Length: 285
Image 1: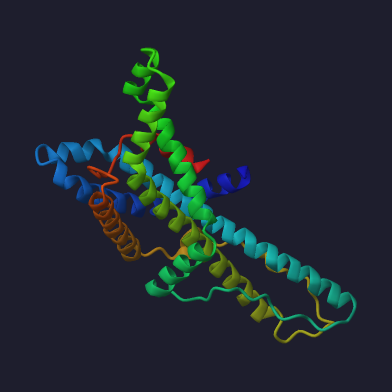
Image 2: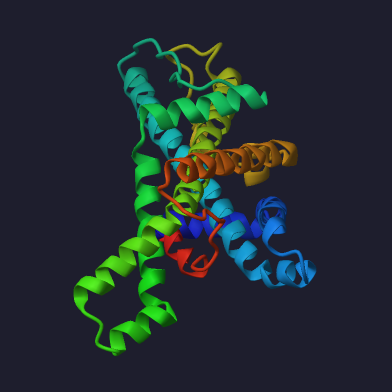
């Protein structure tokens, strides 16, 4: 786990464009969502929100790069097993196996990427559930550490009343929790798929150079793991337009859920709640 975190942070440090693009997307999202509620001194309010925007940009870009690292490691493990088998085949004068096959293809179209991510989340909802759980913990922790809540605790408010207040605050934040859980889980899954596809493509190119014309007596001196680790920028080929589209869909999703919850009366006044975003750094653990 520490290795994954270290590698992800190093990649982000070497490729700051990730966090820059995410910061731009979150800045636009913040500006659009707060516009109806801050008619006066809007620019000052927007500037004051920059630390929160920075935190969210760091979290989402980190989750994407963390997903990339997971995809790379998985692909390396698959090819390690395959390569070791070829070494055994060579020693036994057995024909080399075909290269491993992955379920994702090299397709840079936006719609294919969106489809792959959504299908992956639908088939394996665990990433979303984990993100939702962690964001819920972050929200509950923020509620507990909030000044009014601490005043109630020090004032001797009953335990039942405190629990009711915490639950009430949590339900007020549920729309925000759902939104950011969807965004961060999508970022991680998208990075995971990109990491698998790009690293697999690198190994396939190595295979085409060294295996297509090889016989069982040929040398296996150069392994695919002698290749340099590919740069993060080349892993995902991040396109700002795709991210802006993704965040635009996030905005649409937010307002849709907000309208539904307001209509059925679960949330009286749904807003984009930003009170406890700083505590959400817990998500990167």
